[in-house]
Image 1 (cartoon, rainbow, N blue to C red):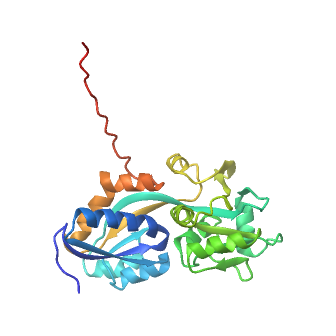
Image 2 (image 1 turned 180 degrees about the vertical axis):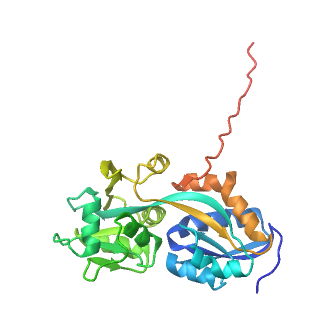
Image 3 (image 1 turned 120 degrees about the horizontal axis):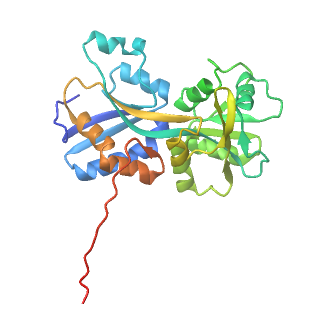
Amino acid sequence: MRRKDDILTGELSVIVDEAALPLMLQQVDVFKSSYVNSNIKLIPLPEREAINALMQGQADIAILARLLTNEENAGFKSRGISPRTFPAFYDGVVFVNNISATDTSIDINALTSMLKGESKDGKKLVFDNVNSSTFRTVKELTKLEKRYRGSPVKAMKTSKEVIEEVLKGVNSIGVMSYGQYLDCVRQFGEENKIRILSLQTLKDGKSIGYFKPSQTTFATDEYALKNEFQVLNYQPNLGLGIGFSAFMTGDRGQRIVLKYGLLPVTMPGREIIIREDNIN
């Protein structure tokens, strides 16, 4: 049952794109430790399922890598509900392979060929879910509306399973969010066994180089698969969703993003302490 709570107390369910779950768990932990009368429940789902859950009213708040379309917003509009949207952080899609593989980079043509099923080198793309924002973003980069039948794309269930598949052999290329990758290597310590591939970036149809995801390449827009995650607030009243959104997009929430390894929307300020020493 939904309750009308104030902005810093009560209970709140938040639908979260699975690609952003590791960071959001940290955001919630810090928020709840600061505001002990609040309780936030995260509902992690692949992007397509997350949008459906939001439209079905399973929660009024969502953390997604895209806004809803006009068609998806129609039900809310008919009820006179307009979303409050707040940019929260930047992430990206990362490609990883087994350190024993010879490839150190991947270009747009190779990605397109794999999604079309035209690749002849035995390589396969391994996603956590074909309904994920990572899969959608890769399709948009390659300008393909769908995955072709027979294409070497394999879907797992979690980012951990993607890493495990990559560790099995040299022909698997894992695809996940950079935030998920950072979480996996911190938890399972496999960073010495897998490699992040440099991704080709095109500008005006011409290659400007190959780049790896990082806070720097997100900030300079050099990385081709950068995503902006936003808070979509469809609460009809000013409840806990406003307080949590303000926390995430404020100084403390943005510091959590920075420390995690992703790019904040607003760079937190630096505190400089100046001491005056007495000189005899």
